[in-house]
Length: 445
Image (cartoon, rainbow, N blue to C red; front, side, top):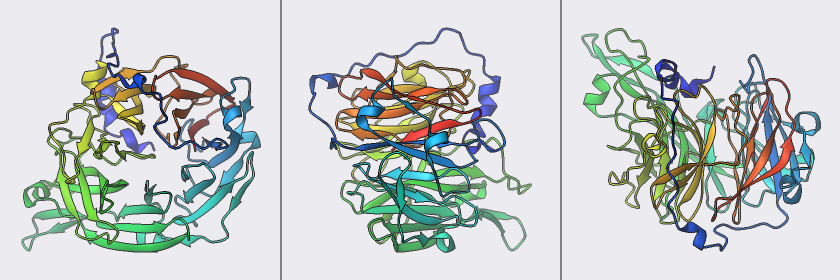
């Protein structure tokens, strides 16, 4: 089941949009600066990842394959990659939660579900299907469950953080009336170099008494991000609501302002919940990074599952509070309804790229260039869009110097790697990605 849009689909199926859509042109002057905005690795490997179908086309639950090529081959439209025939399977019962080192030399993986669920290991990238798995592994399932969400921190590939919330349970008052619904949260630090647990904390995360009396609760945590000072983690939330009268989850409800959990780092103590008055969607993302530390020292965070207002980009300032003066709505900027950011990546100097869909488009995905400084969003042209292009499980972008790499394949159809020049926004079609029925490519690393 594709849970990321469990509420999004309710609106998308019922909305009838005008056939006339428009985009807002990017008014940024970022193309005046052509200096590299990120570290560049000249001989970097580009690892492509593909998800296999399990029961239904595009579900991606049949496992994950990887294959590594040079940057030169990744940029060559005459070069073909077939990860399903030539690649190596990554340990995971379903879709692997892959991330990579900045220089592309190492893949990091936590097995998702199954007998090995929660097992963390690394792979050295040697090219083609040659990946050397670390002799050391560590299983975090006794602390964070067999399906933990996790992110590599942007601290020089030293650390990762895995998060989990146990299945929320209902508590009642002495008179048997409804009190609240809560799970126990785990936030766990990973030492990526030595492949070990560096520490963990567990606690409940209560909302306000009024919010909890109405049934609101944190269902899932995801997308931990380290602030500029390096002393706080910002963790995204996925919210749900219990009906106090029936004890059942409500499919639709009046959403609270978007929320994040802030904890001290590296101690992982003193959890605090912050709330946006701008966005009302979840801040957990789905299979990818969902918050980034910007060049300006602020954290930028995407929202999901707000069917009324669509996705926003929110800003968290260096005081670790939401900056409610910053308003960037994809619906407004793109002239659509029910926008939904499946995955996105900050690319430097206030520029980001988002993979999104919107009501009336079915599951079809698009690529947008976001200028956070100018608060503009532009649909990216020069990409072969297709009704079967679904970014719902997308995970990996490569940012290397001035270039951003993405994999674009409709479900069951061939596609390509695309390379985008970050300062100018120019798009170049790269290597061909050979697909199989029901499968799709879910990232480059």
